[in-house]
Image (cartoon, rainbow, N blue to C red; front, side, top):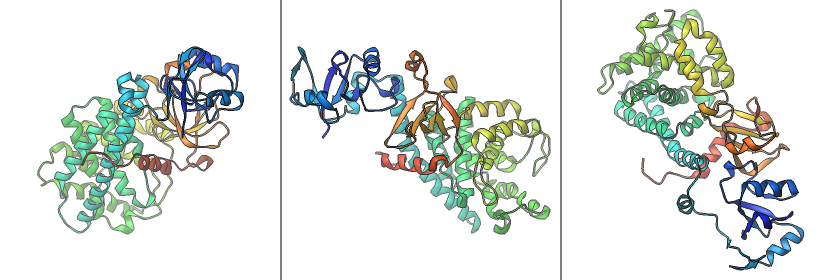
Length: 435
């Protein structure tokens, strides 16, 4: 059982194990949420940042441990000061009463939203699988359910976009069409948030994105899942899917023209070289131009039957070069800013040697995202993963604050990002409310 003793920083000595601070860890330069004091520099750092800390007697070492273990009683005096002992972590309600810093609130909001976001994601996954099967079997698609799902996803994006965007990294090669529809919807909603779209337009963009590839179920499977390059005739068959989707949905109640335009025209290009109608830039709606960008982005970053996906940061560079002939230049620039220099889900190595996954980005601090640390500086895995906010103001006082050194190739050091995300989601449990 953890035995915590509150000590003023002036009373700390080498050998004591610090298990809790008087402020959130994300607001400090300490990479570790719990550490053994091993030097006078660490003592000075603690004195500069904290008024008091909690130390764990049983994890402390040497004479420091003996001193602390002798204090295992409530209200024990030491050096004339009263110390509070507790074997429980401060509850959420207590933290709220004490007042949280912006960084801790951000972290708490992310996890609260992630629990809800995963539930919405799973429901949307079930819906798309069912809708694709309905199209394959010639049954009507439940567009009312789709509208409700997109509305829920949009609410999540507006509250805390990073949680749902994090989940777009849950990709499977053998279910590309399903996850692609979900991801294009989520990323389109995030894109629309960056553009400041009003709720009605945001929902229309998300709904069109979710349904945009239903027509693929009318394409023969040997063409849809061909592991090599399509022949000219096969490509003509593939190019029919936007019209199939449009024909399936055009009579459905509750789908406005904006949604139908997205389904029909998401493969149109601004130079008139797209399909099925060869529209020019002025003839393609703004929402459709948005979805066409997201559609390509998710396609090139996903593992498919005929190729491995490229890293997100490489994809946006490539798409920027494609923009003059294919995409709205202003929209592609906003999309790149929305994705960020270190896209959510990127595996990164810090200048300290630590390795982690980006969980949140901010346009105001594009080089300093929030990262969940997977490996320590010696490349050893954490038993309990740590979080670090590289944008915290406290780093400004450090001579060499931690920064991202570079983005790593996926699966570097044997890290499976999808597995990490699934584990973090599983650890949160199910939402308290019925969705």
